[in-house]
Length: 420
Image (cartoon, rainbow, N blue to C red; front, side, top):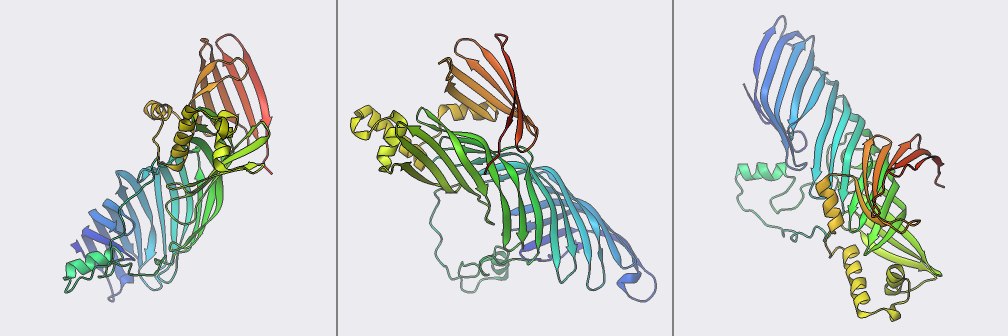
């Protein structure tokens, strides 16, 4: 039996099915029993940009109810489907969806592995989606040069469009003039109650920034207009700024219903009598750079103080060139550094070259998250000393830190912190 295309919102289902059914009694779905099986179905959505294929499902009919069990592959990762639905009005249903470590990629901005346990419940008049979403190995990349892209295609009127063209445009949510067919945010009015939790740190990298975030976000509203409540907060991070390393003082990631999250990162340093602040704020694909200081100074003067510790009028031509390069890097017109490229090739969470404040040695630090709440770091000094540091997050406010070095020194400490 060929499954006719069934459109729900902008999704289409196609494939074949085998059935073995029996009807005992008056013609009614309640009296229908048997089995429907499909092994090659395909569900696709042009607007969402996803395809589930193949879909394998077994549907058992009895007592006016359909019990469903099946598996759909998304990018090679199985999504388990199980539940039941009534065959009579108002057609109540209860369907569960489960996936483990589903790879997620969005352009060159976001990558992670997502697991979820979701439930779609309700009836034909009103459905609701609830459950938990867990993300791991998440990296958000701030593009070094921005996404760019071509300008929007102007409206094109298609006279006498054939049926196939009309169907394709409908699936893509477009009209014959190339415009969106519906209003902004149009879509199924399915209420949401989802909790998104980061099981491992969410790393934000690019333009000299290397930072980790933890937290969870509750998503309510509807599928057409999701409303995030909550944010991911900075745990540790730095800004490498043309040879100057600035620890991040403040940072957060928020989501406003779009695929691209917003980021706010602030680094602060004190140079002589000036407190300078560098901030990146906005969508992660195109955040805006802002500089401020106390007392208030022009932006070029702030940069000169951060990089060289003195006013811009005292800088040499070479130092002025370095100042221009630093602005290009933060504004998105420069490229990634060699240290960042090496970190990517090694596959570690952190790679840093820094100066030990006590000994003056240059140190290479390699950091990796071993498990939820456990972070390890190896420091290799230019003098030949190697140190292993371990951080255990005992709670949201308490961290146990231990260290052991090749020269026999060890250390253990408990740190408590709280943000106000």
